[in-house]
View (cartoon, rainbow, N blue to C red):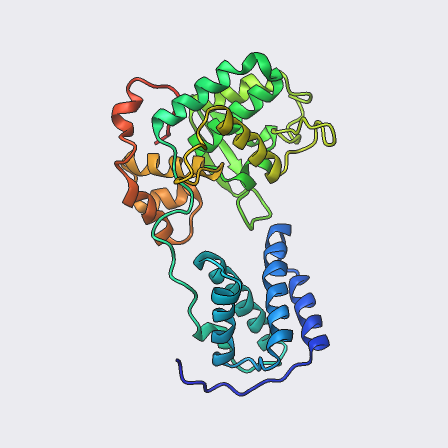
Length: 324
């Protein structure tokens, strides 16, 4: 255990609750996703604070909280790291208010970062199966839904987009220069669309096909991907809606029957990352393309490079493309 040199700070529950509420509402947390993450994480911390009755913002207290997350809450390493990050930033906020002198959470490491993703990637044969299944079920699915889902999957594969980026895409975010297309995306934790990424032609073709049935194809500020449920028809899709749509396609293609593999919509982004690594990109190029800030995360894709054998496969397939 690290030697505890931190002066104990005693806070009453009502006072700490107010500090937490003010921290979550602070202007620096500009997106609802960021605020939601801190709110969930710090709700657990407050429960522990009340239960523990001896948390005085010392290093030993934070270590005790970490063990609470691991043993009593049975959290996985990634979740523990997220919860400790929230506490670390709350403590920094309390330092700015002169409540704390030092940040005890900075002295406590979270769990080790995973060396592989929790979700599996899709093999290229599985991607072929997925698109074949969508084509086979066209007669049973409304055309607008089929074209929408096809475009979502191709954008996620061809542009390595995450779900949050998918739902934020507007019709006018695509731009053509010469024969090349690009897309402006708004990533996780961002408030503006400040990333420009290339778009493969096969993905652009899918988007154009979808726009033929889009209710507002000429309104550049309109959401590209729309919900077709009864309760939210023609409104911008939510992350939950994207997940439900893609998971439905996975089930139709019988890609989620193997319980040993965790396949989810995010598996499409993981597959895209491996494709980029296999295309000959450097780590820095892949980090920029996938909007990754932490180098070890990018290295996971290079560790898996070669598993898809994409060079040989793509010679006879138009289902997957990456842009240099």
